Amino acid sequence: MCYAIPGKIVELKGKIAVIDYFGEHKNALNEFVNAQVGDYVYAQGGILVDKIDEDDAIPILSFWKDRFAELKKIDNKISKIETSKPKNEFEEIIQKAQQGNLLQKQEALTLLKTNEPEKLKLLYKTANSLRQKNLENACCVHGIIEFSNYCRNNCTYCGIRSDNKELKRYKMSPDEIVEAAVHAVKELGFKALVLQSGEDTSYTTKDLVAIIKKIKQQCGVLLSMSVGQRSQNCYKEMYDAGARGVLLRFETSNQELYKKFHKGPKANFQERIDLLKYLNKLGYIIATGSIIGFPNQTEEDILNDILLTKSLNAEMYSFGPLIPHPQTPLKNTELSDIDTILKVLAVSRFIDPNSKILVTTALETLDKDSGKQRGLLAGANSLMINVTPSRFRKQYTLYPGRPDRDKEITKNIEETLKLLYSLGRAPTDLGI
Ligand code: SAH
Image 1 (cartoon, rainbow, N blue to C red):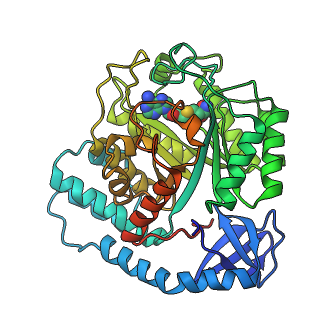
Image 2 (cartoon, rainbow, N blue to C red):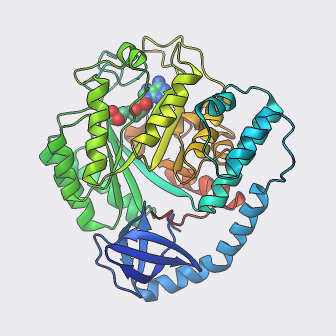
Image 3 (cartoon, rainbow, N blue to C red):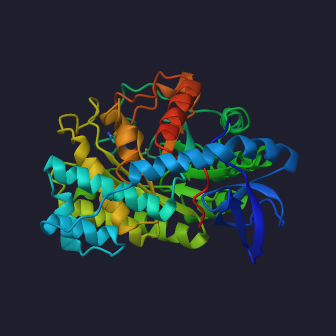
């Protein structure tokens, strides 16, 4: 079983490969594998990551063929909405978004400030239908390896902050990281991985480059790095080594809040934004976003977070609730309710209809039973599954109560796939 369906290249337009998935065409960059028309390939994030022999691709495709059509049917049914004449201003805004019009700031704010259950239901349903209309049932499933919980930063919300002396620290050796990544690709079937850590500068640029190169030599995978504010040179070298994605949240667009809560040697908001812009220019796929639920954060701030994410040309929106950690200064912060987060996902879908919107682990933590499902039905179309070896996973405590903490990786994968299929989602690439 795997979380990506192979497609067949039907056309090459310069550096762009057009891939056919059961009649649906998606574009991807022809990198890494030097593919030709007629080749079977895996793509992730709009980049070709691996070729697969026709003999191996055919049985996988025949397994998927009927299932793919079935899933689409399920998704179409679930995401269908009836349109009726708007009865109030809220419904007018919803209809405007549904028809593919961009919302004014004030209109988006009205949506973020909504609290009535019936209106929220309509908001989520509309975001889900817009997701289906623009991107069909494609869903990204990334694996994440958390390779070190050492961090030079001291953010007041984060459990791995440098002042947290109660935390047992760990760092995986480069060989352990490579082994975990290759295992996730070859044994567990992932085609996209995120390597995340605290800002741990004990891994030099040379170390990170060597890790990326070794993984890329051994398997075809889209590698994203989530290692914080490293130098431009470090990111350039990691790109040259084969990394193509970056997950780096700006945490909050409100500079006052940023200054108050994000602490550390590199805690400069503008530098973080400049780095994100540089990374985008370098060609990285950007995943960014913010934390929802800082004390004194307003709906205006949240809307600015969504707009900043868009202006940074993000491919993936990453928004999640602040989960108070008992060993941090923000331990007594009030926990957001799930609707606060679902609203952000839905409004993000309206503001950037073609984006990938992530259901974060923090959202899953907020509602262990149905956070994932509710996120996917409110406009989201991306997931991450924790594939950190279990002996380390317990210590990567950005926040407490993570549902994946003690779960077997294979069980987590199984449950996630079951959920995706029940919602009619399929792991094809979203294309570019
Ligand atoms: N060093 C990397 C990874 C940081 S940890 C970087 O700087 O990007 C990943 C994310 O966890 C952070 O960006 C932050 O948004 C989130 N996080 C940290 N503490 C949290 C908490 N208490 N609740 C929710 N999210 C938290």
